[in-house]
Amino acid sequence: MKVVVIPVFNEEKSIFDIINKVFNHCDKIIVVNDCSTDGSKEILESINNDNLIIVTNEKNLGIGGATKVGIKKALEIGAEIIIKFDGDGQHSSNDIPEFINLIEKENYDFIKGNRFKSSISQMPAVKILGNLISTNLQKIVTGNFSVSDPNNGFIAFKASIFDRIQFKYLRNDYFFENSLLLNLVIFKFKISEVPIKTIYGEEKSSIPIFIGSIKLIPVFLKLLYLKNYLNTRHNLSMGSLIFLLLNILTFIKILNNDLIDLNYIIICVVLYGLIEVINFLND
Image (cartoon, rainbow, N blue to C red; front, side, top):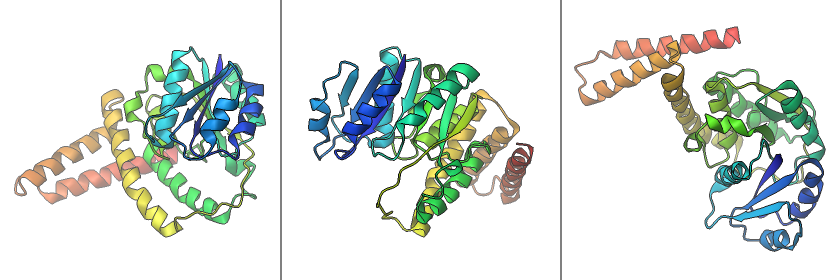
Protein backbone atom coordinates (compact mmCIF):
# COMPACT_ATOMS: atom_id res chain seq x y z
CA MET A 1 0.00 0.00 0.00
CA LYS A 2 1.28 3.43 -0.99
CA VAL A 3 0.49 6.22 1.47
CA VAL A 4 1.17 9.93 1.10
CA VAL A 5 1.71 11.99 4.27
CA ILE A 6 0.99 15.71 4.02
CA PRO A 7 1.76 17.95 7.02
CA VAL A 8 -0.46 21.04 6.91
CA PHE A 9 -0.18 24.38 8.64
CA ASN A 10 -2.27 27.22 7.17
CA GLU A 11 -2.45 25.89 3.61
CA GLU A 12 -6.05 26.86 2.78
CA LYS A 13 -5.04 28.20 -0.66
CA SER A 14 -3.47 24.99 -1.91
CA ILE A 15 -4.49 21.94 0.11
CA PHE A 16 -7.76 21.06 -1.70
CA ASP A 17 -6.16 20.91 -5.16
CA ILE A 18 -3.10 19.10 -3.83
CA ILE A 19 -5.18 16.30 -2.30
CA ASN A 20 -7.21 15.80 -5.48
CA LYS A 21 -4.06 15.55 -7.60
CA VAL A 22 -2.10 13.34 -5.21
CA PHE A 23 -4.92 10.77 -5.04
CA ASN A 24 -4.08 9.87 -8.66
CA HIS A 25 -0.82 8.30 -7.46
CA CYS A 26 -1.48 6.60 -4.12
CA ASP A 27 -3.87 4.41 -2.16
CA LYS A 28 -4.39 6.63 0.87
CA ILE A 29 -3.52 10.15 2.02
CA ILE A 30 -2.85 11.09 5.63
CA VAL A 31 -3.12 14.82 6.29
CA VAL A 32 -1.78 16.06 9.61
CA ASN A 33 -3.36 19.39 10.51
CA ASP A 34 -0.75 20.99 12.74
CA CYS A 35 -3.11 23.46 14.49
CA SER A 36 -3.83 25.59 11.43
CA THR A 37 -5.40 28.95 12.23
CA ASP A 38 -6.83 29.64 8.77
CA GLY A 39 -9.55 27.72 6.92
CA SER A 40 -7.48 24.57 6.33
CA LYS A 41 -9.46 22.53 8.88
CA GLU A 42 -12.81 23.33 7.28
CA ILE A 43 -11.52 22.59 3.79
CA LEU A 44 -10.13 19.22 4.87
CA GLU A 45 -13.39 18.26 6.58
CA SER A 46 -15.34 19.13 3.42
CA ILE A 47 -13.51 16.49 1.36
CA ASN A 48 -15.58 13.30 1.15
CA ASN A 49 -13.15 10.47 0.48
CA ASP A 50 -12.84 7.28 2.52
CA ASN A 51 -9.14 7.04 1.64
CA LEU A 52 -8.38 10.41 3.21
CA ILE A 53 -7.32 10.23 6.85
CA ILE A 54 -7.21 13.51 8.77
CA VAL A 55 -5.17 13.73 11.96
CA THR A 56 -5.46 16.91 14.02
CA ASN A 57 -2.68 17.77 16.45
CA GLU A 58 -3.74 19.17 19.82
CA LYS A 59 -0.75 21.52 19.74
CA ASN A 60 1.58 22.72 17.02
CA LEU A 61 4.48 20.26 16.68
CA GLY A 62 6.35 21.85 13.79
CA ILE A 63 6.63 20.42 10.29
CA GLY A 64 8.94 17.62 11.42
CA GLY A 65 6.73 16.74 14.37
CA ALA A 66 3.63 16.70 12.18
CA THR A 67 5.41 14.52 9.62
CA LYS A 68 6.39 12.04 12.33
CA VAL A 69 2.74 11.84 13.44
CA GLY A 70 1.72 11.10 9.85
CA ILE A 71 4.40 8.46 9.37
CA LYS A 72 3.40 6.69 12.59
CA LYS A 73 -0.20 6.64 11.37
CA ALA A 74 0.90 5.28 7.99
CA LEU A 75 2.78 2.48 9.73
CA GLU A 76 -0.32 1.68 11.80
CA ILE A 77 -2.48 1.18 8.70
CA GLY A 78 0.08 -1.06 7.00
CA ALA A 79 1.79 1.24 4.52
CA GLU A 80 4.59 -0.33 2.49
CA ILE A 81 5.78 2.83 0.74
CA ILE A 82 5.40 6.25 2.35
CA ILE A 83 5.69 9.51 0.43
CA LYS A 84 6.03 12.81 2.28
CA PHE A 85 4.54 15.63 0.22
CA ASP A 86 4.41 19.27 1.33
CA GLY A 87 1.11 21.12 1.45
CA ASP A 88 2.30 24.49 0.13
CA GLY A 89 1.84 23.75 -3.57
CA GLN A 90 5.54 23.79 -4.50
CA HIS A 91 5.67 20.10 -5.49
CA SER A 92 4.21 18.45 -8.58
CA SER A 93 2.26 15.28 -7.85
CA ASN A 94 3.22 14.02 -11.33
CA ASP A 95 6.70 13.28 -9.95
CA ILE A 96 5.38 10.74 -7.43
CA PRO A 97 5.40 7.72 -9.84
CA GLU A 98 9.15 8.07 -10.41
CA PHE A 99 9.79 7.93 -6.66
CA ILE A 100 7.69 4.78 -6.36
CA ASN A 101 9.29 3.23 -9.45
CA LEU A 102 12.82 3.51 -8.02
CA ILE A 103 11.73 1.90 -4.77
CA GLU A 104 9.76 -0.94 -6.34
CA LYS A 105 11.92 -1.76 -9.36
CA GLU A 106 15.42 -0.76 -8.26
CA ASN A 107 15.01 -1.62 -4.58
CA TYR A 108 16.06 1.75 -3.16
CA ASP A 109 15.14 2.31 0.48
CA PHE A 110 14.86 6.09 0.26
CA ILE A 111 14.34 8.57 -2.57
CA LYS A 112 14.80 12.31 -2.26
CA GLY A 113 13.60 15.01 -4.61
CA ASN A 114 16.33 17.17 -6.14
CA ARG A 115 15.31 20.69 -7.16
CA PHE A 116 18.77 21.60 -8.44
CA LYS A 117 18.64 19.16 -11.38
CA SER A 118 15.51 20.58 -12.97
CA SER A 119 14.15 23.68 -11.22
CA ILE A 120 17.19 25.73 -10.26
CA SER A 121 16.47 28.36 -12.93
CA GLN A 122 13.12 29.11 -11.24
CA MET A 123 14.53 29.06 -7.71
CA PRO A 124 14.87 32.49 -6.07
CA ALA A 125 18.53 33.52 -5.67
CA VAL A 126 18.17 33.75 -1.90
CA LYS A 127 16.99 30.14 -1.78
CA ILE A 128 19.88 28.97 -3.97
CA LEU A 129 22.46 30.59 -1.70
CA GLY A 130 20.78 29.41 1.49
CA ASN A 131 20.49 25.86 0.18
CA LEU A 132 24.11 25.76 -0.95
CA ILE A 133 25.24 26.69 2.56
CA SER A 134 23.01 24.20 4.36
CA THR A 135 23.60 21.48 1.74
CA ASN A 136 27.35 21.53 2.21
CA LEU A 137 26.97 21.58 6.00
CA GLN A 138 24.67 18.59 5.70
CA LYS A 139 27.17 16.67 3.57
CA ILE A 140 29.84 17.21 6.21
CA VAL A 141 27.52 16.20 9.03
CA THR A 142 26.11 13.01 7.48
CA GLY A 143 29.20 11.88 5.59
CA ASN A 144 26.99 11.42 2.51
CA PHE A 145 28.38 13.62 -0.27
CA SER A 146 26.18 12.29 -3.07
CA VAL A 147 22.84 13.84 -2.07
CA SER A 148 22.67 17.30 -3.64
CA ASP A 149 19.46 18.62 -2.09
CA PRO A 150 19.20 17.27 1.48
CA ASN A 151 16.79 20.02 2.58
CA ASN A 152 14.07 19.11 0.11
CA GLY A 153 10.80 17.98 1.70
CA PHE A 154 9.61 15.74 -1.14
CA ILE A 155 10.73 12.24 -0.13
CA ALA A 156 9.64 8.61 -0.40
CA PHE A 157 10.82 5.54 1.45
CA LYS A 158 10.10 1.96 2.39
CA ALA A 159 8.11 1.78 5.60
CA SER A 160 10.55 -0.90 6.77
CA ILE A 161 13.31 1.66 7.40
CA PHE A 162 11.56 2.37 10.69
CA ASP A 163 12.34 -1.14 11.85
CA ARG A 164 15.77 0.37 12.60
CA ILE A 165 15.35 4.14 12.73
CA GLN A 166 13.95 5.52 15.99
CA PHE A 167 11.63 8.53 15.92
CA LYS A 168 13.30 10.06 18.97
CA TYR A 169 16.39 10.78 16.86
CA LEU A 170 14.40 12.75 14.26
CA ARG A 171 13.91 16.50 14.64
CA ASN A 172 10.50 18.19 14.90
CA ASP A 173 11.45 21.34 12.98
CA TYR A 174 12.47 22.14 9.40
CA PHE A 175 15.53 19.94 9.82
CA PHE A 176 13.48 16.75 9.97
CA GLU A 177 14.72 15.64 6.54
CA ASN A 178 18.32 16.36 7.53
CA SER A 179 18.09 14.23 10.65
CA LEU A 180 16.35 11.44 8.72
CA LEU A 181 19.08 11.43 6.07
CA LEU A 182 21.70 11.23 8.82
CA ASN A 183 20.01 8.12 10.24
CA LEU A 184 19.72 6.57 6.78
CA VAL A 185 23.47 6.97 6.27
CA ILE A 186 24.24 5.50 9.69
CA PHE A 187 22.25 2.35 8.92
CA LYS A 188 23.59 2.16 5.34
CA PHE A 189 20.24 2.26 3.57
CA LYS A 190 20.22 2.52 -0.23
CA ILE A 191 19.58 6.16 -1.20
CA SER A 192 18.91 7.90 -4.51
CA GLU A 193 17.54 11.19 -5.88
CA VAL A 194 14.92 12.19 -8.44
CA PRO A 195 14.91 15.48 -10.37
CA ILE A 196 11.66 17.26 -9.50
CA LYS A 197 9.76 20.25 -10.72
CA THR A 198 9.31 22.90 -8.07
CA ILE A 199 6.82 25.75 -8.27
CA TYR A 200 7.80 29.02 -6.59
CA GLY A 201 5.40 31.85 -5.85
CA GLU A 202 6.03 35.40 -4.76
CA GLU A 203 7.18 34.45 -1.26
CA LYS A 204 10.33 36.03 0.13
CA SER A 205 12.54 34.78 2.90
CA SER A 206 12.11 36.77 6.11
CA ILE A 207 15.53 35.68 7.39
CA PRO A 208 18.66 37.32 5.89
CA ILE A 209 21.17 34.81 4.52
CA PHE A 210 23.96 35.74 6.97
CA ILE A 211 21.71 35.51 10.03
CA GLY A 212 20.13 32.31 8.72
CA SER A 213 23.56 30.74 8.20
CA ILE A 214 24.62 31.62 11.76
CA LYS A 215 21.44 30.01 13.09
CA LEU A 216 22.25 26.81 11.18
CA ILE A 217 25.54 26.26 13.02
CA PRO A 218 24.16 25.04 16.39
CA VAL A 219 21.63 22.81 14.59
CA PHE A 220 24.31 21.10 12.55
CA LEU A 221 26.62 20.79 15.55
CA LYS A 222 23.81 18.86 17.27
CA LEU A 223 23.38 16.71 14.17
CA LEU A 224 27.14 16.11 14.06
CA TYR A 225 27.06 14.96 17.66
CA LEU A 226 24.06 12.71 16.92
CA LYS A 227 25.87 11.14 13.95
CA ASN A 228 28.87 10.22 16.03
CA TYR A 229 26.74 9.03 18.94
CA LEU A 230 24.79 6.68 16.65
CA ASN A 231 27.96 5.59 14.86
CA THR A 232 29.56 4.73 18.18
CA ARG A 233 26.53 2.59 19.06
CA HIS A 234 26.06 0.89 15.69
CA ASN A 235 29.19 1.11 13.54
CA LEU A 236 32.21 1.82 15.77
CA SER A 237 33.99 3.70 12.98
CA MET A 238 37.40 5.24 13.60
CA GLY A 239 35.92 8.72 13.34
CA SER A 240 33.20 8.02 15.89
CA LEU A 241 35.70 6.45 18.31
CA ILE A 242 37.94 9.51 18.11
CA PHE A 243 34.87 11.69 18.59
CA LEU A 244 33.95 9.66 21.68
CA LEU A 245 37.50 10.00 23.03
CA LEU A 246 37.33 13.74 22.35
CA ASN A 247 34.14 14.01 24.40
CA ILE A 248 35.65 12.05 27.29
CA LEU A 249 38.82 14.14 27.33
CA THR A 250 36.84 17.38 27.13
CA PHE A 251 34.57 16.31 29.99
CA ILE A 252 37.57 15.47 32.17
CA LYS A 253 39.20 18.76 31.22
CA ILE A 254 36.11 20.66 32.33
CA LEU A 255 35.97 18.79 35.64
CA ASN A 256 39.67 19.20 36.37
CA ASN A 257 41.74 21.42 34.13
CA ASP A 258 45.03 19.93 35.32
CA LEU A 259 44.28 16.30 34.51
CA ILE A 260 44.27 16.62 30.72
CA ASP A 261 46.70 18.53 28.54
CA LEU A 262 44.89 20.70 25.99
CA ASN A 263 47.18 19.34 23.26
CA TYR A 264 45.49 15.92 23.51
CA ILE A 265 42.13 17.50 22.78
CA ILE A 266 43.58 19.44 19.83
CA ILE A 267 45.11 16.23 18.45
CA CYS A 268 41.71 14.51 18.60
CA VAL A 269 40.07 17.43 16.77
CA VAL A 270 42.73 17.33 14.04
CA LEU A 271 42.47 13.54 13.65
CA TYR A 272 38.69 13.70 13.44
CA GLY A 273 38.94 16.42 10.80
CA LEU A 274 41.43 14.40 8.75
CA ILE A 275 39.15 11.36 8.81
CA GLU A 276 36.24 13.48 7.56
CA VAL A 277 38.42 14.83 4.72
CA ILE A 278 39.49 11.29 3.78
CA ASN A 279 35.86 10.15 3.76
CA PHE A 280 35.00 13.08 1.48
CA LEU A 281 37.84 12.28 -0.96
CA ASN A 282 36.91 8.58 -1.06
CA ASP A 283 33.19 9.15 -1.60
